[in-house]
Image 1 (cartoon, rainbow, N blue to C red):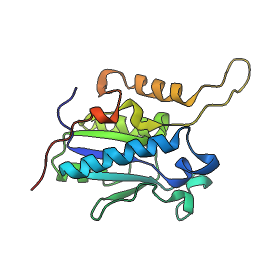
Image 2 (image 1 turned 45 degrees about the horizontal axis):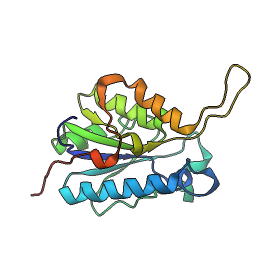
Image 3 (image 1 turned 180 degrees about the vertical axis):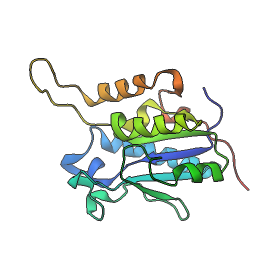
Image 4 (image 1 turned 90 degrees about the vertical axis):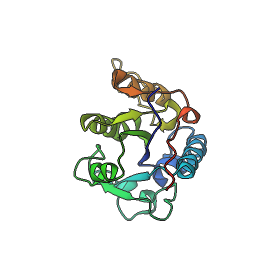
Length: 186
């Protein structure tokens, strides 16, 4: 596994994506795992950064709505970075914040595996960061069937394919518990 993680990036864990009829499958379990991971990161003193999709093309998470709100409340001082693109680095201060903290290795978790999570991981890799993407730390939705040549795909398989598509450029431990944080207490 990659060396100790120096920052945790939580991607688009917004209320409409984890609550009610519009939630990703097994959202409650995902939230429990992410909550525990965030607390471990905070306890080790590494920066925790939150990405928040502004829902430019998605009424479900449109900026200012209840569904847009973060499901995991940031602690005092934790940056919340609004974004209009899938890649959390595009048009944001994410890169500058990570570099200001001297981060070389970060863990990425959140929603949607094949969209914003994968795009942000690719953005991190393109900028020279090492990435840890725990398999049980990201989720997405089932893909509905779209005809005889396009069968439906279960969300857990979509997430697995998204992680697989990143190749060996990421470290993908099976669980969030396997993520090791650097101790960065002042």
